[in-house]
Each structure stands twice: as structure tokens, then as C-alpha cells.
Amino acid sequence: MKGIVLAGTSSGSGKTVATLVLLKALMNAGVEPQPAKIGPDFIDPGHHHAVTGKASRTLDLWLEGEEGLARNYSRGEGEVCVVEGVMGTYDGEESSTAMVAESLDLPVALVVDGEAGMESVAATALGFSEYASYAGRDVEIAGIIAGRTRGGKHERGIVRALPPELEYFGRIPPRAELEIPERHLGLHMADQFPVSDSVLTEAGEFLEVEKLLNTASEPDLTYSEEEGKERGDGRTVAMAYDQAFNFVYPRTRERLTATELVTFSPLEGDDVPEADSVYLPGGYPELFPEELEVSSTMDQLADLAEAGLPIFGECGGMMAMSQDLTTTDGETYGMAGILPAEVEMVDGLQGLGYVEVKARDENPNFPSDASYRGHEFHYSRTRVNSGAEFVFDNVKGRGIDGEHDGLRRYNAVGTYGHFHPESGLFDDFMHCASQEKHPLS
Image 1: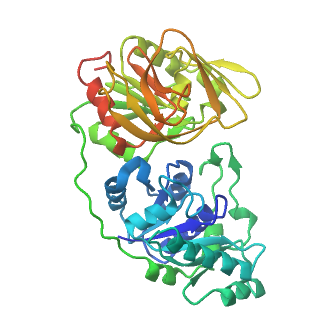
Image 2: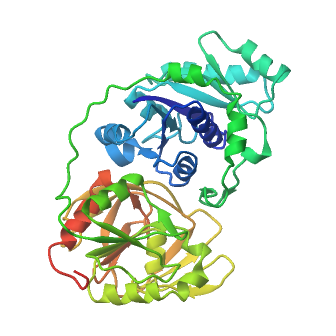
Image 3: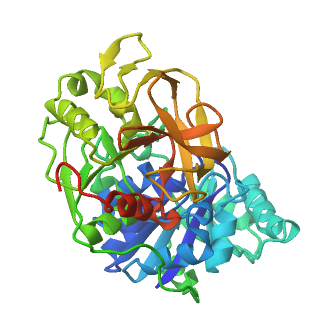
């Protein structure tokens, strides 16, 4: 499958909007696109899915390694993969847009905000192109997409100023309907602020779709078969999934489905399905504290945890497993009470970036000394009370208390980290959980 990367000059430069417009333009041209996102983001892929109806592949060198990166790219299906970058093209020591483009040998279309510039847009693009050589990156900046750019004199000024080695792939018009508002974990989710098909279609008329297709190239991927524990062993995983819990990588869903996956909604007060373990993904429980406080699902989860059912929660999932959650307005709400901890939402960012954790000795939930890579992004802090223990030491990242992550009580574990299946964490947790029968087995 051919591919092209849409990179940016910085965060907020218009990569997501340009990606959505291109995806829609390709579909309107009868071309089947496969969306993908560089980095550990959950929100932008939701917008990709809203436009295409297809899961957006996660591409991240830190989370997946080079072989895992190639494997996850190869899982895509379509005629061309449109890969949205992360932050600015060269930003990120562990997995920048440039690093991923280089690893997959994909050309880059640079999205440059042209709202207040003309010749300076070309100068910016040329600088980004020449910086690749200076930084020792084998990356091809093939051309630009001019974001928030008007037609006529504005567009002509940009095109005239571009050096011949940089293609002009068209523009994204400056329309308010194309702007996606932000909140504390990034952009709004696609179901809460969708960009209409008609607006995307109209904007796509200003892109050079054929030129972008001709620029895309097919990478020569080299990777081994995926390693991991036994799959499809008859065990069942129950996963929470609703507006409060929805930060799930496509590969995570695929991996759990390969065993047997059932879903339920704590917001709706669903009964926890019969299963051998429970997964509570991250999301926005802080937006629904009143509903979660009165949800019978939370009471069931507490009873099942006390009875020994393996439960794994990530970030928002861990917050729901705590004793209570205090919002930024100072109101406190009761949560499941599985973990002896109290979570407080604050205005300042408490944890951001890639993490690596190492399993502690005599750990019943993970093999001793096993290490897992993930990322954290949260505006909450957690106070741990007595009666719990940690299963992970931090190698990189803040975790729960700066030194540890993986708060454990009973057979339940909650972390601030989000983990991709390529890390092996899900396989190891399910493998350990399958060693003995549990209440819902």
C-alpha cells in the first residue's frame, strides 16, 4: 500500500484538518484511503474514523519499535495510506514524524499555515526540507499544502515563491467550519465536534489529489511475525466502552477480539459481562462523575475485584477504580473504590510523554523484570492510601508518584500509562490472569 505523510511545522499547524480534507477528497475521487496517525494519540484517529469509517492505524517507534511500526502499517487496507504526523515534523526524541517517515521510507507533504504569509511560507518549507540533511534524517519533503490560505493573489504569491524541488499540493481554505476546538487532552472527540462531509468536500476541491497520489510511494516493509503469548485461548475480556472510556488503540481492540471481546458501558449502568478479566481504558471519566457515582456497574466492578477478578485500568480507567474523584470545581464523587487512592483534577498538566515501566519482583500480575513502553497524558494527581502496592517501577515517566506506577489491590491494577499491544503488556496480563479460575470464569 502506497503512503504519504502529512507533517506540520508545529502543533496546531492544521495537520488534522488537512488530513481529513485529503481523506474525503480521495474518497470522492473513488480512491480507498487508509488513515494512520503518528504518535500515541487517541483523538485524531477518531476524526479519521468519522470521515472514512475505518480504524486509523497507530504508528509510533517508541510504543512499537521498528518491526512493530512496519507490522501496524501493513495491517492497513486501502490504495493509499494517509499518515497524519505529530507535533512539528522534527519534534520528539523517541518517535518524531521525521523518524517514522524515515523508518517507513514515505514522502512528506508539509502543511504550512499560510494565513498571514506568502513568500515566508515558501521560506519555511525550504527550511524544513533542508533541515533534514542537517539533522541527518533521510526524509523527503516532497512539497507543501498551504493551510488557511485564500485563493487569488494570496495563493499565487506562495506558489511563485516555492523552489522547483518543492511541489505545491494545493490549499486548505480559511473556513471557521474547519476549525476543531481544543480542550485539556487535545482536540474535541469526533462525535462531539464533527466536521461535516459537505465542508470537507468543498475544501477538498482546492487540493491537487492526483499530484498527491503520484507522490505517494509504497514502502518496502521488513518485519517478523508478531511475537506474543497464546492467542485465542478461549478466555474472554470485558472492555468498558462509552463516552467516558474510549481511548483504545485499534490494535488493542483487534488483539482482544482475537481472544474474545465483549463490551459494556459503566455510564449506562450495564451489568459487567461474564468474562475472565476486565479492561477499563482511558477517556474522560472526569466529565461524567455524577453518572459514574450512581452507576451500578461501578458497584459490580468493586465486588468482582474483591472476589479476585483480574481488572486492568489505564489512566481514566484507573481514576474510575479509585475511591473518589474530585473535579476542578472542588466537588468530590465516589468511584468504584477498588484501589485505595483519591484522584484530584487540577488545571496544570501533571504527566505528559512517553513512559517505560519495569515489573517488580514477586509480582503476581506480570513476569518479574518485564518492561513495557507506553505514554501518559493527564491533568490529575493521585494520593495513595494504605492497603495497596505498586507492581511497576518507573524507568521513564512520572507514573503515579514519580517513582512507581501500576497501583495494585486484590487482582486489580491501575496505571497512568497507556500501552499499545506491541509492548506485550496485555498478553502478559491476560496470560497471568489465565493461570487460575476467577469469579466469572
